[in-house]
View 1 (cartoon, rainbow, N blue to C red):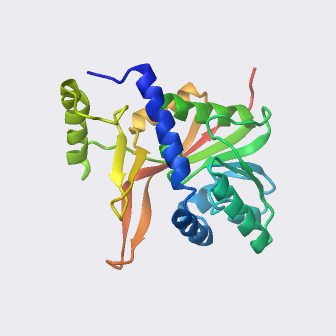
View 2 (tube, rainbow, N blue to C red):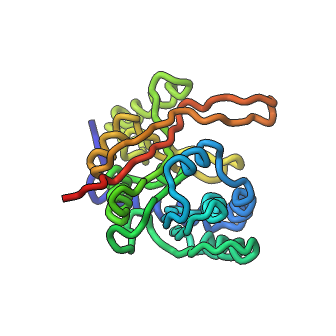
View 3 (cartoon, helix red, strand yellow):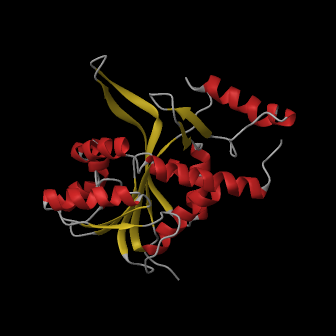
Length: 266
């Protein structure tokens, strides 16, 4: 197995970070997220929030975007601080907050480097694809560890993630990745993937290469254990509506995770 050197790996992660921030700073993306903010919570998210969060909870919304999750949470009676590392996205969220007259404390911030005191929040969330946009296993672990640190004992970390399933409709893609990473790289073939599960794909206009990481379920569980969380609930599969086919289907390669910081810490 050939891996990138640590320097090249670090360089690739920094390049990806800048690309992702740039993507979420573009006018077109901001307009898309203006519309996303109107969609509100997915039914799975609303169900979990009602089940685990007490009214009046102080919630940290990581990679908050334009406020799709933050605004409904405030309407449900919670207090929310939202952070995102794309300054234009935070400006949009503040604009919508003022327009909707919903008070949310939006700030520029990095989900892998939280600037909050220990034991501050009742809950920390990172939803949609946000955790999967964090490049590098260690960086995703930093996000989990940071969330654990800023949670009060007994607090909840709720997040969603794509889940890599080899034997699925994506199997051909995973086989191609195996060949690229563990064979073609030997012969100098240009391979951006650093980790098994890194995916680069074109957007609809086929002019931009987008990144996402799809970890295995076992890897997610391992990282949650490393971050000292207790796993309370895992929901695999979300119901999505396909307008073109006028039908609902279960997306089996996506999951919600509810984790808890232990109540009694010694």
